[in-house]
Amino acid sequence: MAVWQETYQQARLEEQLADGSVRCHLSPRNCVIKEGQFGFCGVRGNRDGHLVTYSYGKGVHATEERIETEAVFHFEPGARILSLGNIGCMLNCTYCQNWKTSQARFVEDHDVHSYTPEGIIETALRHGIRVLSWTYNDPVVWHEFVRDTARLAKEAGLINLFKSAFYITIEAVDELLPYIDIFSISLKSLDEKYYPKVTAGEMQPVLDATKHVYNAGKHVEVSTLMITDLSDDEDTARKITDWVLRELDATVPMHFVRFHPDYRLRNTIRTPIPRLLRAQAIAREMGVEHVYVGNVNDPEVAKSCCAGCGATLVTRFGLNARNVGLDERGHCAACGRDAHFKLRGALGTDQLTVPALPAADFKLHDLDWHGDIALMHIEARNPTAQPASLYYRRRDGNGANDPWQVLTLTPGESYRFALAKASPGEIGPELAIDRALETNLHEVYDRAHFPTVTIDEGVADNDVTPLPHYEGKQNSVENLHRFISGAA
Image (tube, rainbow, N blue to C red; front, side, top):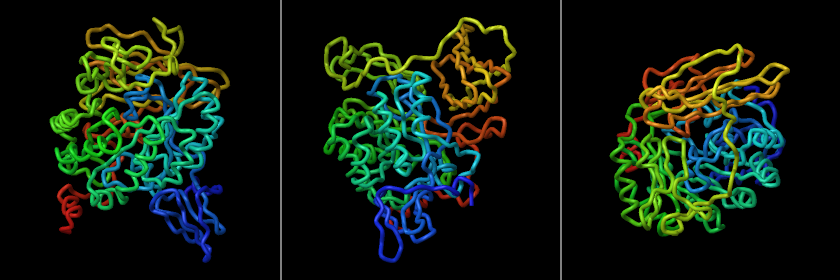
C-alpha cells in the first residue's frame, strides 16, 4: 500500500447498506463498496462500514497560473489563480492528459503533497492571489476538501473556480453551489455511446449537472477537447453548439480545445488546427457570441471581440490576457454592448519587478520554447530559516528583455508557478535562482496538463506526448470508432 493510502477520514454522501457495504452518492456511478475495498475512483472506500476518503488534504503541488488556464475567458481576464489538483478520478478517459495522477493506481507518493484548508488560503493571500481553482485530475473526487476549503475561502473574500468533467450527482452539486463562483465544464461529446466507450462514464448526468449550475446563476463556460479523428469533426461541433444554445444560452462562452496524444491513445497526432478553426466558425455561425480555440498560440483565435461592433475587447497569447476594450461593467467601451464579462476589480497583483539583479550568488538558467512547448512550471522550495528569492524574465528575439520579476519564498515554503510564452517573438524564460533554493523545472504540454517529470529526469523526444509514457496496451482511433458504433 502506498503511504498516501494509509490515512483516511469520514466522507460525505454515504449510504450504509445492510450487509456492511456502503453506497457512494458522489458520482452517478453510485459505487457499492465492500468492507476494505475502494470505489472506482481509487480514493474513496469502505472502512468499518463507513464511506471514507483517502485524499482529504492530499494533492499535487499547488501551482500559480492564470485564469485562462482553466478555459475561463469571461471572468476577470488575466487574473492570477492558485490551481489545486488532487488524485484519483470518477472517469478513466482513454486519452487522459493527467493519467499519472488521475488514475489512483499510478499515483506515486513523491507526487502527493499535504495541505490544510487554512494553509491554502494563507498561501493565496500571501502571494496576492484571489482565485482558487479546483482542477487537473478532477475536483469531484476531492469533494470534502474542496467544500471545506472553498467555504473558508469565501469567508476570506476569495473566489472559487471548479474545472471539471462534471460527472457528479445533483446532490453533490448542491453541496458545492454555496461556495463555487465559476464552473468551467468539459463536455466530451454529445454522443451517448462516446461516454461509456471512451471515458467509462455517462453523458446525461454531465448535461444535467451543467444545466443545474447554469440555472443556479453561476458563471459557466463550456469546453470540448477535440480528439483527432474521433471528436474533431463538424458534427461534434454542431451538436455541442446546439445543446449549449438550447439548454444554456448564446452568451455562454465555448472553447474548442486542441488535444495532444497521451495515455492509451498515443498512436495519433495533435488535433489539426484547421479543424478547430472550423468548429469555432460553426459555433459562431449558429449564434454563439463568444467562441474560442484553446491550446493554440495564435492571438486571433483567442481574442475577444464585441458581438455588436466587432471591436477588440481582450487580447490573448497563450495564458496571457490584456483588457483593451472593456469598460468597468464588462461592456464594450466602443459601443456599450454587454460583452458578458464579469469584472471584480483587482483580483491580485503581479510579482514585484526590478530592472537589474541584486548582487548575490545565483543559479542561472536559460530555457528555450520549442515546437508546441510554450509553457513551463517552475517549482522552488526554501529549506532555510531565511527568506530566499527567485528572479525570472522573458527573453525576446530582438534583445529587448523584460524587467526581472521576483518571487520571494518564506522559510520552509514550497511554491510552484506557471510561466507561459507571451508573444510570437519570445525565445524563452531566463531564471536567476538563489542557490539556497531547491528547484524543479517542468515542461507543460498544453494548459490542462500537470507534469510529474522534471526536465532533469528526462525530456520527451518530441513536443507531442510528454513523459512518462503509459506502458500498457495502446488503443487506436479506429478501435474507438468501432466501440462507439457497436461494431466491436
